[in-house]
Amino acid sequence: MSNTYELTLGPLKRELPLVKISPTTTIASFVLLGDAELTEYAAQQLSKKLNGTDFDYLVTMESKGIPLAQVLSDTTHHPHFIVLRKSVKDYMHAPLTAAVHAITTSSDQQLVLDGADAALLKGKRVVIVDDVISSGGSLNTARALLDQAGAIVVKQLAILAEGNAASRSDIDFLAPLPLF
Ligand SMILES: O=P(O)(O)OC[C@H]1O[C@H](OP(=O)(O)OP(=O)(O)O)[C@H](O)[C@@H]1O
Ligand SMILES: Nc1ncnc2[nH]cnc12
Image 1 (cartoon, rainbow, N blue to C red):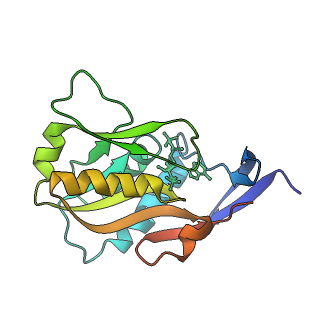
Image 2 (tube, rainbow, N blue to C red):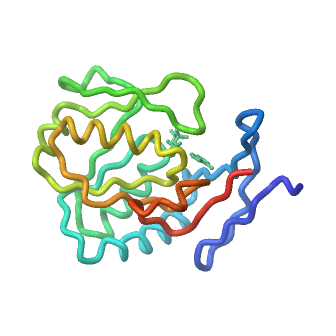
């Protein structure tokens, strides 16, 4: 078996390294951080999926979602977006926290919504955006925090839907990504 998977996204091609993450699962590692060209292209394409969607804020998750949300924010003229962090910081005020299980991380993790951001999101229409949706664990936890804040999730976007996520009808994405 080759040790990379060729991802094609419109005119762009990337060789993703295959990485065994458990005895039964190998992923094609998609690390968006640092790939400005792909981030820009993906944001342009995802913005088309938001045509006609009325929303107040984009919400993403630390860390690989951040550059994508930044560019998408610019493209869609929504200058302020919200980041769910992976740890509590001393500068946060009354943060909301929830446990998260993502396919890439076996240890315990959490997602954190700063209380100031939670107050901002109350009653607001939000779009969740991430680089990859796989098990859906991160998305579920993000939704739980947004529910707690009283936000209304109107769309869920990702560049790639990995494994079974590609057959979900409640997310919009640009390409499937196989598991191996
Ligand atoms: O659907 P899931 O199984 O939850 O997987 C998707 C999540 O996994 C990745 O983040 P990761 O946990 O690798 O963290 P990072 O972005 O900080 O690298 C990705 O950016 C998603 O947030
Ligand atoms: N294939 C992948 N590469 C990087 N991060 C991921 N998170 C979930 N699936 C991933």
